[in-house]
Length: 447
Image (cartoon, rainbow, N blue to C red; front, side, top):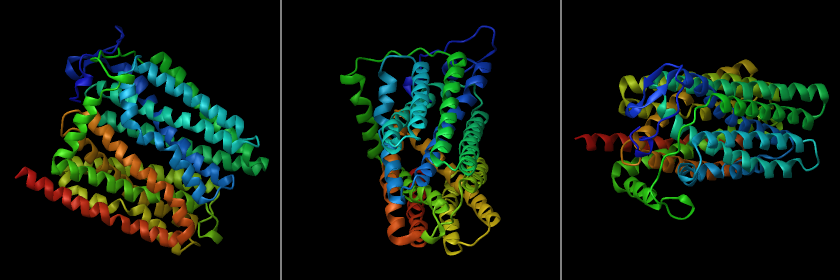
């Protein structure tokens, strides 16, 4: 990383552990990174799994599609505030280890509170009051990990990226595949939906508490950098004004931003629409899958397929270049919507066919996400203030995804699943057109 915020900070090291040269000549403990890098990636994956479990739980509690997507969209507002939270983490006092440990402890408390209120008559009100703390903790945790610790890993970027993806996928496999299946089996055994999901959230809270203890012991302390005098609340207007001016200054930056926004626009509809389609009853146009079948389809088959597709797409980008791979990968990104469109016209398909379709669609989506990650990394590194540029782009994508995701349930209820997936499939024409513009602009710029 070339951002000035990374220079001048040396993480504490253990003299008994072998060290390697990190970026800027810093001495980075190789063995320490293998103790905390997988666990940090695992905690990130668990947090994403909790969001999916929340969607299933709200559906099991009787909320309709529009209410469920509206709740999730409101809870995802902290992701839209990432540029602001980025500067809060960077400039307020406290080491990055404190930020990570605090966010994990708050996540554990929030999930424990949700598990406690689920069996009560105020389960929905209590859940909506406690989960915003969890969502803010997710964003703060991700910022602290990506901004401060991952750039200081030993110089094995390909291997470390694979480890991050692997443990994030394992966490989602456990969180969605295992815990949703546990919830479904507990519903069958106890005949009580509330106590079944309360147990699941107690387990997830225990995982975050264990991660908090683990990182308290093994996570090294990185000194907080000294920053120049800041304005009110410790924020620096100048950095973000400079980053915004740089983003909007050139045609390549504007096309990149438009491409990422179009990706978020097209992906946000099936991202929430497909799980609702899998769970919803056949008389409403859904597949009517139980929590156990949902865990198998979405939590096991799809997660594994997306991981494989992401690794494959990353290797293709490195081998052939982003210019040749971008348009085909953008087309493959529509795989989940096309698979759901086929199943919406054939609701009587067997579970084996559903798993096969979701595995193919997951590989296609993983390849598309690889292109998305490559464009994001290229855009962030194309100008001054890499961290600011990346946070602004992710914030713009989160705003688009939140607005479109909130409308997903309303559209599904009003036009039906078939018409919804027809619409979401056609939406991928937009990023394909912008991808052609991106490639053409890149050729002109190189000339």
